[in-house]
Length: 171
Image (cartoon, rainbow, N blue to C red; front, side):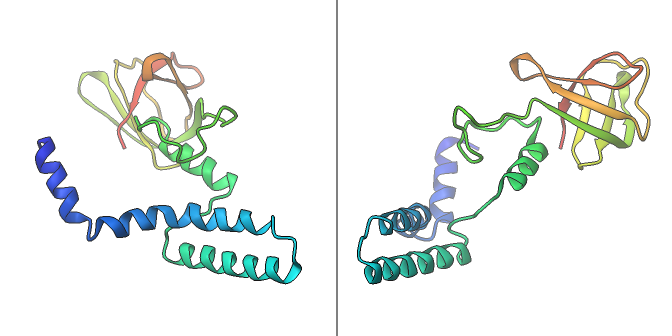
């Protein structure tokens, strides 16, 4: 699809550009209002401000303009996305102190031999991986596999008793 067609599709898909921008800002504005309330010294005014800000946050969450995740949910999402090439966005932090997932450990559920001695295997978390080089000792169901992020976007899989092999995320 060329760039012009993609832009036309996005324009048609968005019902109203102003509403989309407003929805994108609803979450941050609600949080900013909550932070502003802390600076109010009069008790009644501060309480009224907090009540209004809490209502705005609750409504934004109901409309799914904002989503609240705890660290466990973020780790789970990062784990499920490990191995995919994603744009550099601050969806799950993105700051200097943001922990990066450098390896994934999982148990092989299903596996299948592909042509050329390659293997496709599924881990217990649902991720599907494929070897990109021939494997001499194939994986078996129940094997524990460690997949580490390599250099230049590559991934290396290791299993006890087997040599390391380069892999890529299929699904």
